[in-house]
Image (cartoon, rainbow over all chains, first blue to last red; front, side, top):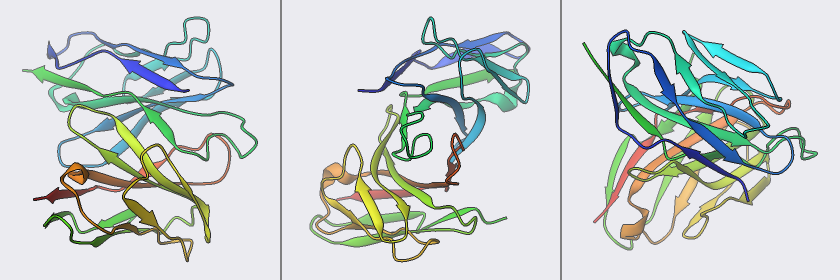
Length: 118
Length: 113
């Protein structure tokens, strides 16, 4: 079945440091890949997505590239801020299953808690 | 911009009680989902629906029921609450076009004592 593995947290960095959160996946077919962010007490918000191999998703300074050869979708940011402190989830949806790309829900990693210190 | 609205935000139940978690979306999305989030874990899919009158089981459906009588609403029912159902529950929706992201509500924190 489908699965997502992401690095364990918490990850603690100083402000302006470079961020990488690793994510690898196992899936049949052609999944779409997502990064979601969850701030304390809130629901998940879409951060970025990629729908095919070599696509790069980007938003708010974060980037991730869909690497089919290594089945990875690592999240990066060049200079983190205190406001980036949150839990980050990597997720995939089944692709092109005939019902339009993942009607049957997302498969999530366990989440990575990111703490940015001033 | 309401998006996906979940009620209540918090609830404490006794073992054996029943309750319904409400979810409504105003984006005219066909697809809706219920997930549970346990500490240190990602979200697990409970049930989903691809349109009014159509529902299907996800990864962890035991102990729950759903219905979808309208496009907007997708309630989740717990019939006999058990301590193992203590969790944070999230409802999500998405458009039916391929590769669209899911939009999440703020969650319902449920404790079974």
